[in-house]
Amino acid sequence: MIRSAPANSNDSTYCARLGAHAVHAAMAGKTGMIVSLIHSQFVHIPIRLAISGRKRIDPHKELWRDVMEATGQPLLLQERRKKLRKGDEAKKA
Image (cartoon, rainbow, N blue to C red):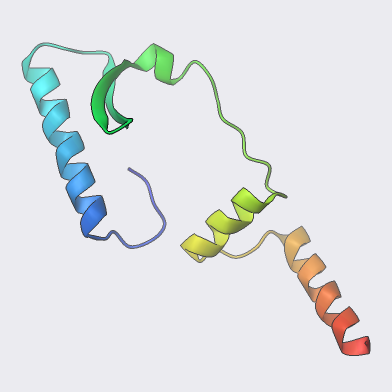
């Protein structure tokens, strides 16, 4: 699990459960797979399936802005410029 915010107790529990399921899979001889949580069930996903497609996020839409805000990362340069322009326009009004 990769995050840019400090882990909390839910993260620790989730990672411990992922690890336990991965160990059980390895002990059962399963290879070439990852463990994931889908609809509240831990499942084994073949690595080839997991990497077969890529999700893309538009960095100019709300989802990315929310991610940046939640993780405390700086805004993109373009977004920063927009914010500054809006602030200048508000001062003029």
